[in-house]
Length: 73
Image (cartoon, rainbow, N blue to C red):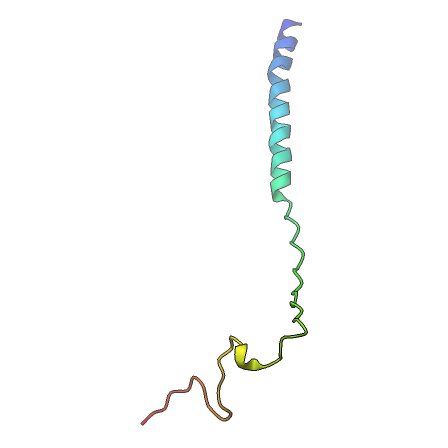
């Protein structure tokens, strides 16, 4: 009787810790859900602002100008 009780005192914590390790491993093995894609919000332009491109941050080039091609002499 005493041997069985001692065996239970050893096996119960061992089984409990193994169950916790397996549960933790299963949670880490599950892939995380992918984040939802963000929608691009275009700010509404005020009515008094003109649609002139002179305030644009994009560089302005003259028509027919080739950008990024080096000229060889």
